[in-house]
Image (cartoon, rainbow, N blue to C red; front, side, top):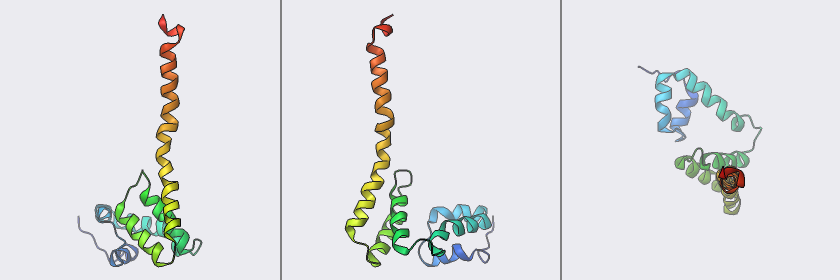
Length: 128
């Protein structure tokens, strides 16, 4: 499928700035306009001025480092930007510590189920 990038200024700007994930290229090839609209949507919080650059970078670090995303190039890019704008390493570490709690849900969900199931197997009613 042939892709024209002339109508995707946001995607092109992201490529030029080194903010483009090569894994997005198949999306852009299949549907350049959808990809352009998606990138416009996800870049709006920073470009609208609603969030300052510091807050945006800290949130972006959390998103990219999260257990459901784990995108190392993005984590590196946003950590570099955060440091460049003066965010202390301690604050970045605190964001990473908070983000690591997402994995805690594995235990907080499953441990009570395991306890219930183990109790059910040792209760007198289960002996019948």
